[in-house]
Length: 245
Image (tube, rainbow, N blue to C red; front, side):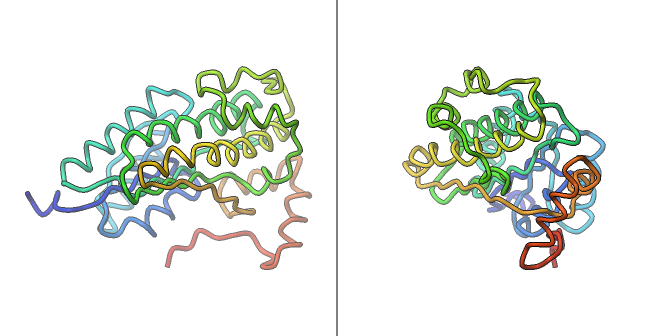
């Protein structure tokens, strides 16, 4: 086995446009990094940056709203781990769209269905100690949904997830975003047993306002005053940074 392939566990980071690159830098030392994004130019730039900093990184074009695309990424991660006699030990799913940049339909397809795809696909390559972290949002904690709707978001077969009557593709994107992020919380909770049976774990994290290009657009959008108020009321009284030092 060559030094290039020797005993490097695999880190998968999905989404490079916001927090993803910072995550890859922080967690990528000594790991083989698979970066995934739907944007070829952004992905190429992120891979070049990491390789220039001494990381072993490769890029994969992925559309998380499509099952076959996410499954292909999971298969590539499993193959990369097998090639170096290691394992996929960390997956961080940061990809998403927001109300100021997307319609309700797009938010449901990317933020809600996309997360379900990641949970399902990477279970197949999870091993003892594998950790999947899905980046949700504190806005999901603001949701007040009917019990039957929450059950659907948590447990509906992934292929039927977007079929619920409450998931109106023409809804206000801000409402869709809240529902999608609540769905992320519920989906992860419901999938925990299956992941735990393999000795693996999965979690959501719910950041506040982070200084990303998407966050900056939201501050300039219709909900900007509300977002700024949340920043002002926080303990730090500032947006979160992507500093990795």
